[in-house]
Length: 166
Length: 184
Image 1 (cartoon, rainbow over the protein chains, first blue to last red):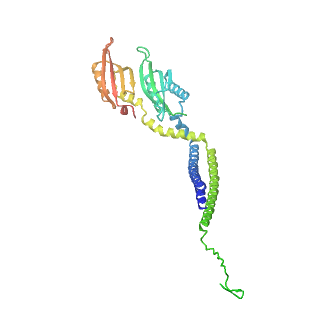
Image 2 (cartoon, helix red, strand yellow; image 1 turned 90 degrees about the horizontal axis):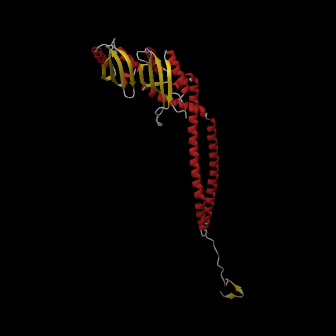
Image 3 (tube, rainbow over the protein chains, first blue to last red; image 1 turned 60 degrees about the vertical axis):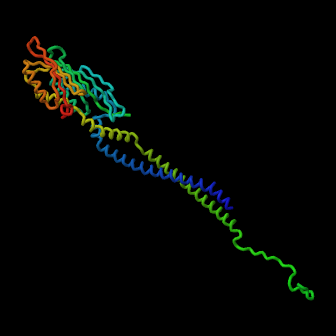
């Protein structure tokens, strides 16, 4: 009888106890996850409410470094700034830029040609620098379009920034 | 024992009286108790396991419910905003202002010097200027003005050519400190 009891202890009790321990661990893990996720969900809901209150500011802020290249916005913005400042936009090209995949943000290269006077160019540069979407000018080349012409041709290489939308 | 007149006083044969002393079946008793105990504990464990399984299933349902409550579109929007906030400060800090540089150069421009062309490179901190001047003294004054401009670290005169008009066509290269020359 004692031997049978011992045998049953090892055959029934031990596996049952081990199974129960595993179940307890699994349950504890799930309870921890529930607590964590409930907390996170509550915080997200708070943030959602806060962001809904400041939707206008957030929309403006998102133009500074948009999610995605937003090339259409860039083209419209450059064209508007050029015409507002009395310059003629003679060429415009946009490339991928040198992007490091690990960088927290990406850059969109912009190559634009403009024609006009120096005062208009200075005004354009100031407008570009004050624009909501941040654009850094990397190089500027300026020379008269023809010898002794009052019209100056400008070539600007710049970078606009964005974050990956993926 | 003798028989006296057919009366037997004591029996001839004796019967052994079996007396059961408690403790003789102890091992069996212990075995049975242990067996019952094992079965009771096993039953309890099985019941507790079943109860825990039910709790796990309930927890899984709660997790699935929480997952359904998530608004993934809003979460992605908040994540993007968080990234934008983190990097905007960094980009603004490194933002360059060529208008500041031009203002500094204009402030030191000699009256009779006329710019013909220029080429500015932020990546190698250089500004090449081709300009016209009346005299070498004017060029010297202009170079001195460039040297004294805030943020300009070096000024080189690359060449001077006399034009048929009598004017002097000169090329100069300015080397600047980006952090001073291109920032507000």
